[in-house]
Length: 540
Image (cartoon, rainbow, N blue to C red; front, side, top):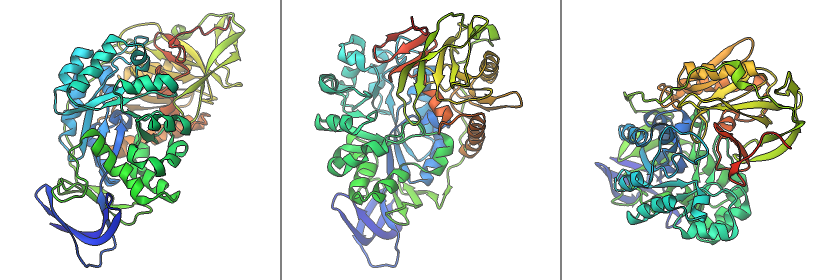
């Protein structure tokens, strides 16, 4: 097979008319040749850090969409399903991913549970990590979110890092806002990347200290604009990732969108493609081709080097997607889950108080970090309730693995004026998380999730909508088109009910993520992520 076009030679910074000759899975030859093809041939895109589960799709369904956008490989942390199902969940992702051409590269989740301050469905300890690191299907130790454990020399954390080092596998980081001597120690432990930088100066310091910085632009966390100006100088040590990508966003584009945005800012195209196509292969030792003789024939054909409109995607010499169509067939799989809590009563969401002031989580649009603020309480019949006038709404996290009393907090900036929204996608332990304007609405939304053994929903006095997520309570058993359409309808309903957030469900899913400051809610209580301990709802 011979493919003709303008060859984009990233290492040598040249573009020339040529042809790629493929035999079986490999590139037999790349040579200059005269022809009339105006398209461009370049290595495929790689998402350098993603939780496939956040697309609400199993890997085989995710692949169908990502391949259309020129993504040939991912560096995937199966942390979400691992918190629900443990090692069995990781094995599910690996085996399902193997049934399609896209090259999924899974890591061993380092933080299951993410902290001891929440209830997860499983535990992966250092002995499990030791065994996983010996598995050739496990490419790296996934993001070490327990950065306090690294800084305070926690024996279990250090043992996990040691097992990765012993097997010569990279260690991914997660250190939002960690600076100075703390980040120096974090890096010296052997941690080599961070995708959590949210300011230019933070990312610059980490780069200067030898870390690889991954520019993240997902459905909720968007750091592209803050960090992209670092790329021209530091292109050899930067990569692109989505981290978490909801299905409706994935249908629109993937890493190709970040390349388009970077080039539109006047950044050298070779530097952009170095980050998008080459650096992840080198850093994670991926078995992915770089468009060189003898490589696996993993490459894409694009219309131009501005819009990066993908015309064809090849993996191991096979044409797997062309002009928005994928050639991957449906894959059958077993539906696994872990959902055992009983339905709740309205009284479970009451919280007796006489406090005049309460601590409130302030959600920030497009950010995983939150602020801790104080607000006047609204008390009716001795019960703290939502105040839709001031947009301070009651929030709950409900343990889905056993019957426990729901934990309660209050949150600002969700903007709901009616009803409630809820989800069993609640990073990191994936308990049920909900926000509503009344206890009755909260209870209804939580019970709708429980009845379906997982999903995301919206309801008000007129209607109820739910997208069921039967696979571990976090993924669908449907196609991306079906789930994307249903999710978009839910997103629209949440906004019609008053939410002003760009991605209300993605933002909701991170409000229980304790490892990111500053104030979050777990199923065990309100948590101060700056001090890394529980705090009180009432301000004394």
